[in-house]
Image 1 (cartoon, rainbow, N blue to C red):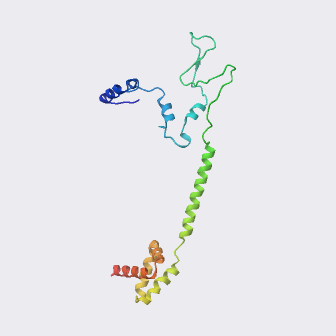
Image 2: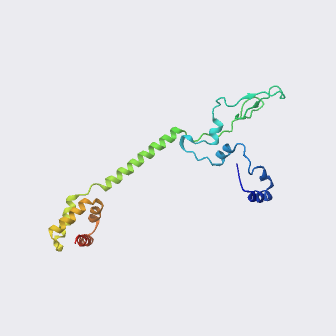
Image 3: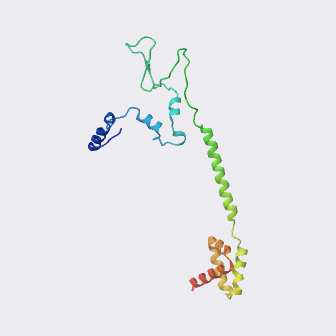
Length: 190
C-alpha cells in the first residue's frame, strides 16, 4: 500500500490523475511485485526470485473449477494458480530462465571462502611468530655501551617481555631509536 497525507495526495493526483487508483489503496500482488523489483532482502536459502515463484511446486493451494457460464473445455483457476501458455498442438512453451546457482554451488563457495580465511589467518600467524626473547635480551643489553647500567636495562627488558607489541616495535627500530625508547622508558620510571 502506498500511503500519503491529504496534501501530498492532492498534489500527486493533480500531477498524475491515474495515480489516484493506487494511492492509499491496497495493491494486489504487492509481495510478488516487491520480489520482482528487488525489495525482497532475504538471503541464502530463504531468498526467492521470480524464477523461484514460477517453479514452486503446486501443493494443492490452487483450485481449479468450472464456472456455470463457461463453455466446456475452458477452466478458470483459483487465487494462487499460475497460468501457462499453450500452442494449438498442446505443447507448452517455456520461456523460463535458467535457475540461479543452486545451494550446492553456494555451499562450495562458502567452503572455499572458509578455507581462504583459514589460510590468511595462518599466514598472518606465521609472519608474526613468537618474539625471540634471546635476541631481545641481546639487543637491550647491547645498550650498556651507551652508559646504561645493567639493572636499568634489565628493568626495560622485563617490561618488553610483558608487552609483546612493544617488544616487536623495539626490535624493529634502529640503534638510535632504541636508545630514545630506553631513555623515555627509564625517564617514566623515575
